Length: 565
Ligand code: PEP
Ligand code: MG
Image (cartoon, rainbow, N blue to C red; front, side, top):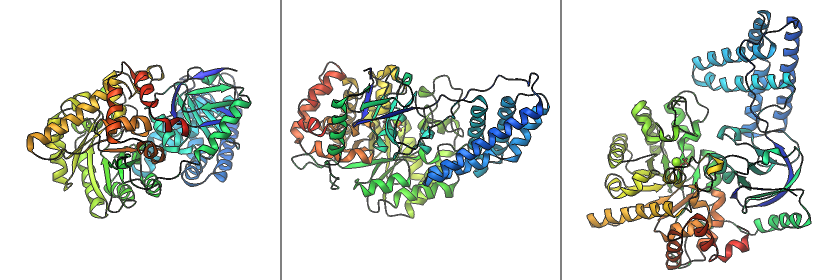
């Protein structure tokens, strides 16, 4: 039995065969020629490959539903696109190899679609996907992307991009294991939102052969090959346990009745509807960039209004916190970010894009205001990656100009945590993004598997920054003789039930997380009083390191072991 260790992201114990996500298809060498192959034969091979790709995509579309079906149908159509094939055959006639010809023809068609803008520009991705599939077929290697299998499987990948999830069918994927990625990478965020048991940063795991049966423990961060009866029993017991947690009753509170609203992190209307059905107390983070991932051009006013209104309409009368576009680093948007930046996490991302591409933020605020006016939700708006009080004041002025009355800031940069008192003079609330706050406090890229241990929100330094933010809000209130402005947490830390207790103990006023995590967080919060939560927070913040902090707190929360969390 081989054991692979990683960082547990979502609890859950499952057993099943692995399917390895194939590596991306590399470009054929530039200028690769036919080299004696008959052009007619090369053209025929290309057409056969294109037909095979189309047939496979059609067959998958027939089995899929919803968004996944639409993506597959659009891609299948593109596989036999006469313009694409004609352009490739022309290049073959001029001496290019079949692989190089379809590669270059794909580039040409994609650029043309991109230049047309709007809906046509979106299709450029389908062309690039299709050309990679045709090249894979010509090479006789597996097609790129999430593998297709009729049986449920454990998906093993080097890492996943947010866009990969468009075709990830949660009914077929039992668990997600990646060799790379950190616990706060977007792979991890997506796994949590899908409720999939997941382990990241499990070095070496991609060496497993397709079809090997493994056991995954998402809480312990372990993957065992050739599991035995003990693991089979643990997986069966988990299936029963998972169904006993029950649903959330709509009020987050501690054992003494202290209320801590539990809100949802959403990426669009679909998530919001699911979050409302799960009784979330509104939305604590709408990641607006998720509505437009894959867009090459700025979304238009009407498109934006419709996307935001779809979320607001799921929560009439409840709070919805909208985050303005957070493009950059792991979430590039070509109309805002520069792909050639040497250090994107420290580059022009989040609110900073207003410096280099002025106008996009103001137009987004106008669209949010229009959606707000047409809905019943209580809309708050916050900017990501705010570093100074001056930026907070500028953002508040822009919100006011757009007619949005409740501006706020995300606290993701240590400087914002340490100067929260001044930031909160300018805005009405703060929401701590522990994912970025951790990567910047520890100087550890959140996407890197080898740095996962540093990238841990249990690090006492990160907890000290959370405390500094809450203390800053208290100082700001004391200076003005008012009550403290709300400070919530919307990073992944809020979805860890033990850490949620610590955050409550540090004085955080609300928590926002994937809706799937709310029942477990609510159940554990209800086992402690505010005084006990404060004691646990002191224990964690006073620990020597993340491992000690986590262990000390978990040992005092017996419900975690009972629920297998
Ligand atoms: C965060 O940084 O904690 C956060 C919530 O934002 P994102 O994960 O989208 O960067
Ligand atoms: Mg962030």
